[in-house]
Length: 462
Image (cartoon, rainbow, N blue to C red; front, side):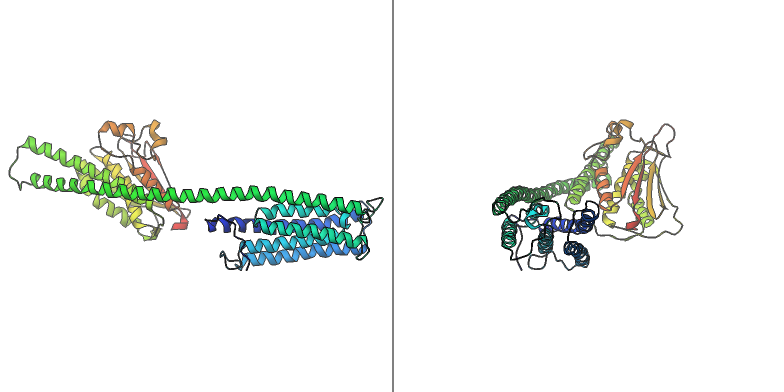
């Protein structure tokens, strides 16, 4: 099997996809060409009264019908998976070469039966060689171009000396040209120069473009690897920072629980504040770790997950935080027949934890956080609403950006990185879903705007 793989090929997947799309384009356009040949013959014969011989009409009809049925075969081969994306097997490049050779044969026969060297169809060789230059290696295209020039020259000489029959282009020409040796020499020379220059330009431009695209792919791969290394380094450093903070928390807990002896109330208050600040630091570190893990994520492992059970679990984990903040947690499942959805449990738990955690953190005493699960048109919707401080209008377009925090959240003095919502959005989009919010929410009350997030899980993932 001939190897038609271009030099500098790095991304074979991209190569196969590109050539496969062009092969399908060949198949589609060939139906048009098959019909056009038949229409051309009929229009020339019966509208313009060109005077083709009966043999010429039959030849054009046979060429047209043959192209049509061979094209059906090509479509079948393409659809049934006979073409393999492997270098050593019959791959898209071999399929393209096969189609181009067939088209050149059709052009050769059509040109012969429509006037030989007097036929305008010879110029379709040039058109096809330019297309070939965009797909096949230069040596192959130059070889095919040379064969076409040789074919024109040999057929013209054979017609000149009466070895094969000449079919004129009807009564279009007042005087024949096929028997003029000077015309033959000029025509074949001009045609040869035209086709080789065209192939040279097309092949060089295409090769340069292909090289650049492959170099770009290689550069992007290197950048991706560098990004992954950076993320792994960040995770390692941040995790090391987390360890001593957790140790500090443990010692603070020992002091607050009285194991180190009685401490004055004022000191206890300050230590409690330090404990709360260390907890915020842990949350910030976890945000950085989560976004780093997500950037390294390549696959989403979906399993059947009970959303009501997942949210209930989130509420239990956030119970102490909610009780301390004086926030009531509610869950309403409006689905008639609750059924599992296909999501990555770990990632979705992280997303819901971020939204519910923010709803509690940026709420006020006697606040409410309510989660509603419902189904519409086969899609699943999760709405998480609160009656907290809400999001100012001027901040709404920026809330999903990394490291961005709303102005009123900063004013409240709650620590954070601004990474949470960007992580949530990326997780939902990894699942093919969508997320949006509005503020004020439906729970707004007593001047508290509140925020309401809605997550869409497409029915394809249910």
